[in-house]
Image (cartoon, rainbow, N blue to C red):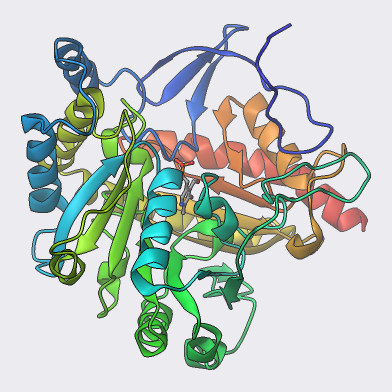
Length: 432
Ligand SMILES: Cc1ncc(COP(=O)(O)O)c(C=O)c1O
């Protein structure tokens, strides 16, 4: 019996099988099975990537230094981040590296509170921004309330010490029901008013299966400016590759005050987060010191991994590969939607796609149950076919997000397994 505190998606959940190894886009389980890794937003280069191994060997030789010490490779990582990811984005000013995107969102939000003198924060409905400090407060998916999901009892959410406003989400679908006929302007008509006392508004591009809508983003950005709220683009999932572009905000015309990155930025070789400030914010901080510090931020291991990932991204033209693979996924999703009556909606970009099934309203799911959610049943069936998929912890959504190095045959393998899982959902749907 392990001494680790169990994690589980529901109050009465069982632990998943142990992982004992990995290679390329596959991982090996304790029972000897090799599984195709179909959902791993933190591992864009898969497992045991030779360039990551080399970077980690190099980092093992480096001194152990904390964020208070200037370190040449941290400066190089910052320069390379700007050269690789922010080329042409002259408004972007400076980066501070940290340990996770949760932490980065917390840092960005607490900065915004201090900067604006306001305590309220805002996000859009069904958003997930992490679990450290203020990022947990900005995570508004009902099942991720940060507290305790108590079996068959009301959940005990962690309290939030300031108002958290929610904008309507950018609904949409590449296939199926987009959820609304309203335009982005209609959905956001009250946004500026909602944000009047808000310090910062976080907008992400995948959570809850709501993907990028440039018009929505630009309207939300303008509402922020009108209301005096900073706009933080949470590019944790989407930054530096997953959508086949550097950033999602680039599809719109407005530019954020702050960008948050994390997950794949260190190629999966190390935990990472990053907060990038606009040059305007940097200029306005003249004569001030941001009193925000942590021992392991900007650690040499993380810096070596960031630099290695950015090099692979550039040298191996990963964005071009992702855009090619996106076409393969999209064609398969079109067929999948036609074949499976249980599917309500599919949306996605690049190598991140969500399949939402018909079922109970996500607004009323708090995970205080031992009943296995539909999405988990689909994922379990896909696992029997040798593919690991993921749910967002919701009852009716499954998402795929394989390593960015995935090949076309591997994509077919992932979607074949997803389809096998959806047969279970179809049977249940047709029986109701
Ligand atoms: C949009 C978004 N922001 C922030 C986070 C938090 O990232 P981490 O769990 O790596 O801290 C996540 C994690 O899923 C995310 O999807």
